[in-house]
Image 1 (cartoon, rainbow, N blue to C red):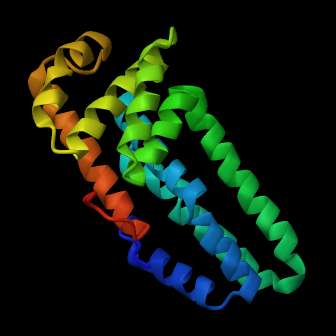
Image 2 (image 1 turned 135 degrees about the horizontal axis):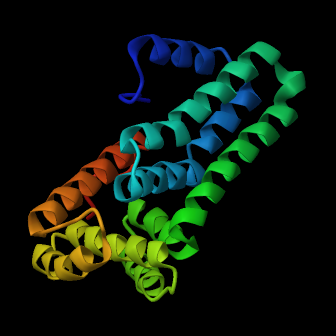
Length: 204
C-alpha cells in the first residue's frame, strides 16, 4: 500500500499500526479502503477542486487518514475493541460522505464512485441526472462529472464541447484555458486516487 499524501513520519506510523493490528482490525482497515473510502476520496477531491479547498488534502483525509486512525486505535485496543472500532470507523466514513453529498448531490456522488471504477455508462447516467438539478451546485458537479468522464474515455472533443456550458455555470472558470486546466487537475487526481486503491489508472 502506498501513501503519497502523507509525510514520511506519518506514513511510518501508519505502516506500523496496520502491521501490528489484530486480524479483525486489519479486516476493518481493508474494508475502509473499499468502495466507501474511494467514494470519499474521489468525491472529496472533486468537491474541493470545484468549490474551493485543498483537493489533495480532501482526498487524503477521507481515505488514508481514516484508515490510519482506525488501524492505530485497533492496534492499541486489541480484539476487545474490534466491534466498537468498526462502528467508529464506519460512522466517520459516513459523516464524510454525507458532507460531500450535501454539496454535490447524490447523483454526482454516485457518478464519481462509478467513474473511479471505470463504469463510464453509470457515470454519464448520473451526470445527466445531476445536470438537470435545480440546485446550481449539484448541476455544476454533474457538468464536471460529465466532462471528466468523457475525458477519461479520451473523447477530448466531446469534453471541450462542454466548456461553454462550464464557463457559464462555474463562477471560477472564465475561459477555455481555465476549463482545460481544471479538467487536467481533475483527471490527474482521479488517476492518482485509482492507483492508491490498486484500481486501473487507465480504463480498458
